[in-house]
Length: 73
Image (tube, rainbow, N blue to C red; front, top):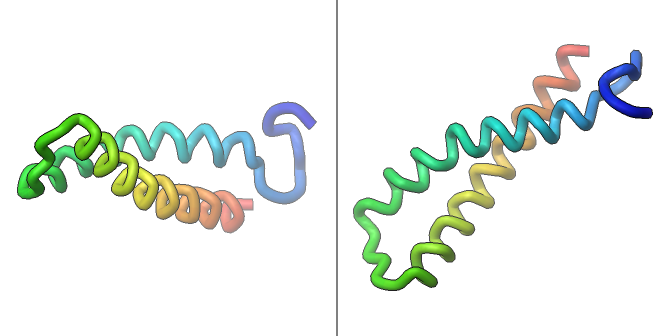
């Protein structure tokens, strides 16, 4: 029940780690690009924007990584 030693099913630890890394690698540039045309006058507005866009990026990434892992097995 530790790492990726399970022979059946999806390795959820791998899915979580990969989702985290891919979300950072894809999310940071995406949030930056999407924030350019938006007026974000305060730090609160910037943080809320980053959280909202980041949540969507995380969700899409998590679904994609899970589907990849489930089909790979």
